[in-house]
Length: 307
Image (tube, rainbow, N blue to C red):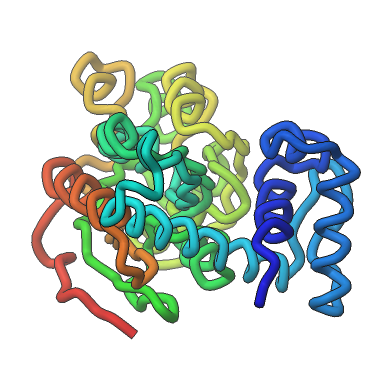
């Protein structure tokens, strides 16, 4: 049998990033947390935490933390069926999810807030590129994710949400300065572009489709959805923006499309751990409803898949 006191200590260290903060959340001493984790590592025969600032889980540590997430969901279901187990009501549990930054900055946050306002949860949101959030599911770091990957991770369900519509845009002055003779491979190779981070391929995908060839783009890196828009309005560069995030700027003319009517639609999917959990089911209902209202629907809709 697993020692769940030790597992709770491990999960707290990984969640909080240090033994000291984990001790405060568990209302024990740091030495007690350290001892529990050390005993668990001895039993497992391997390291579970990489000590550092912050502390991080090893591969086996992530698996055990994922197990604890599922245990908490099961305990929540049990206390809902047997209220006498928790006379003061169900305790709040941590619910780790992953989402891409543009979804979080537009349609996802309101859905998550509506869910969290009534559910006994504390949301733990990891932000990554939509083409990489599925890896968080695969490694067991999160229980659900907005992802650009249709194929579900092992043990998960996958549901099509629709497509996020992006447009290539910049300030009018920037367009006049860099694209006076048109938007082509030559001008794009000279005009500074905006990049969210090293995983961001949207600009390259739009350029490949528009020019029919890859182009080495000069780029500024700005890992913030709202700063990305502000930088474009200020004339720092051009980039692919969620249409819903810049619709007002397009209307008032502070941003213009590089090439009118050339949107890039990026399909998004909701993947969740296949677990009997009313909490995950309710979160899914909120997410799907928000996606139907906010995202482009149509060809991107695919049948639910399970593995």
